[in-house]
Image: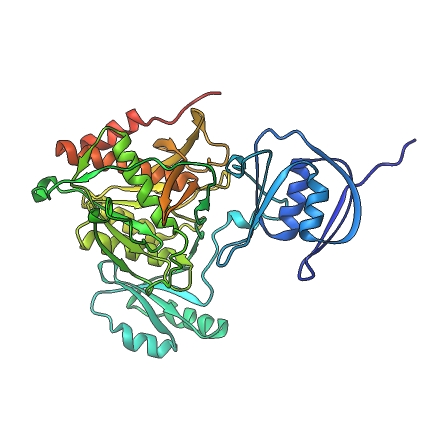
Length: 437
């Protein structure tokens, strides 16, 4: 009887060295091992037919990947604030759209809690400054409209003690976790490609009853150039100003381009739609549900009539849910991306019933990477190509789809002075989610 072969990959964290002994190991199973052990976000081109057979010890990561992946191409993209990403493909990196989840990464489907932070809500008139002093906490965020405050503590012991005190305080109506929001991918450089020419012209402002202003809740938004910059009403941050590397575009810059391109592609040559850019990531490069809720409410206070949230996470935050409900009560729709993990876990804020949840399409079908934990309301192409500082960049995912759907809806509302009660059903019909193979 032949001996059973056990495929083995050993990824030595810290040393950045790899051992392997594999025979006829399918590429997807191989990459599951890599994802689990490396902690990287791994993406593979769907349908690749490749099986690895190799044996080595103590090779550097790049050399190990070359031996493991044979004639396949791959690209490793280091992350500054996000995880490192590995793309595996035949010819083009943009084809690597299916995320590979390691068997040990189930915890990624749960909401990640912001360390040493609590969200509290209090009765009107409560002296929150005095309460914070009593708790030895720092107030780092405020949403007066929801009587909500973000508290930060020096250590876990101080936070635990504060929980006990808050539980017995009659002025405190709720104590909640503050969940982290997934860090969005930065756009990638595309060689040998041409970006579409966005020629949208800015129309004069319309009367208040017909005015459409998009609240783009995202990362910091860079200058968009002479053609599109006039559409930007203002920029502000709720978590401190970001120190942005202007050498490459941010996620928000990609989303703004997706929004305007979709508006133009829907037949608009000019528009009076304006955009308020809300940076909820700040200097730390990370965001949380408190900041997203604060950004949405602040955008509405500054005149936004529709919100785009090309972001999200797996933490179900009562505060964020209530922010969405408050906006819905003011007839301010929220568009949000369903997420890009291929997960069946609900993703928020897209998972809230008042939100217009948006999935991505590729080749006329729902994209393989799109989450399925939320039933989407609309679908839009999940890719955008644009020019920035003389170079061509691309971005892919349900984030792009959400921005595109927001662009089409905003253009429709602006052109016809149509109420959202007419626009949203028209968008759901015109951008229906594909069904079947």
